[in-house]
Image (cartoon, rainbow, N blue to C red; front, top):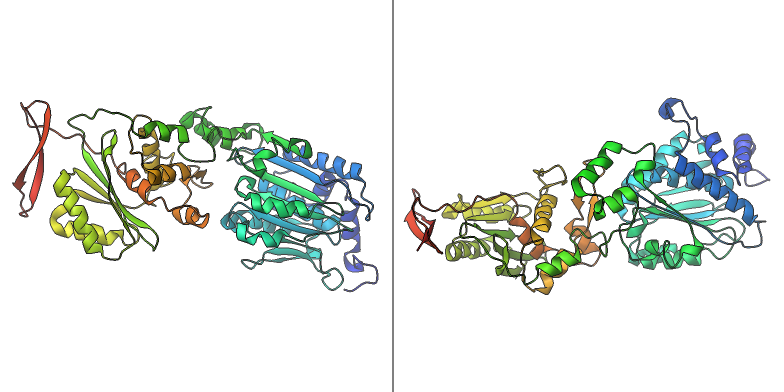
Length: 513
């Protein structure tokens, strides 16, 4: 398959020559490269209007730059900030295949907000379109985890003709350095760009200094800080950019988008980010706004005598995490607040005894314990100690009672967020920072709000939200008000003891004069 006239070989000459012939016209390249309307593309006859416009503008920019293979030209910089489900990942795949098949010896790097996004969404989308691509025999896909790449089959002649997929972790910034293609195109593509750290954008700019460089950025505008946000701010003159409302795109799920609007309201950050393509009003894609949290700190609240006292127990799962017990009575999350905090320990009996002591001291009406990891052992100890009527095990990943939330943890935080509008929390820096730091996304499959996992937050250098999760656990279920004995009214709240059938002292709430 070797040839004296690189970059192509006779066997693939016709298709390869055709593809290169579309070097200045990506939209025509797209129409030529796939069998639209047949097979897996039955019912599809080309890109949506917004994507067609994007490709037309790209073609006009390439033509205007008129790269001659020697003299560097201005970088092509194009960005799309949009709502949910408009087909950004497909356009990413098309751009990769377009540049790879029209620019011999190009070098590219693709990244995304998380390794999960890269491995389960961005790269699989390329695989899908690669299998449909008329020129797929000219390239090979390397699919191993950590070494995802598309490269030319002419490796001996063109060893630098490839595009690799790299995680955007700050410590991986070296993978983005030194990429140049003086006689071709050096290109970078950022998928879900709000999550790509600023430290990655710096070396990417270094790869735009020679040849015919290109930089593309796509994503929901989940933050109003950072490099992606600045494309619509300080960097606006350097980029061609679009803000796309998902409702204006043919392929989007209009029913789902309307549900988001109905559930959260047009002014909510969820609708701004996931539907309208706008940045949030909060500082990041944080789940609870800083304003709501700050207003709840030290707020003076009145608590009804019939409000149940609820404990939330978050059990440390790993070294560095904390086991936390948090007490809330109605809107008051400040008076008792954090009852217990201790670094990770495997002495479950000791921890269970601590919780039992709080139940006895405060007369807790309900205790919700995170049953994940070693938490189930704590629940077992408390049940065996006679607190089966009071203690409930909670699985963070279990089904949410409300379809707006992806799982039980998201539901509890949703109830906590609503409660903070009138609730009170202590002026404690740890719990304030944890409440502020918790971020969210919209789960693609369940179409519901999903919280960023503890493990991912720790990987980003943030504290595990153990204290905030303990408070959130107090909202695991609705607990009925304390019921007074018939005919007994008054201003005080007192508890008396009686022996239940198992011989344990049971707390009976009474309202007395």
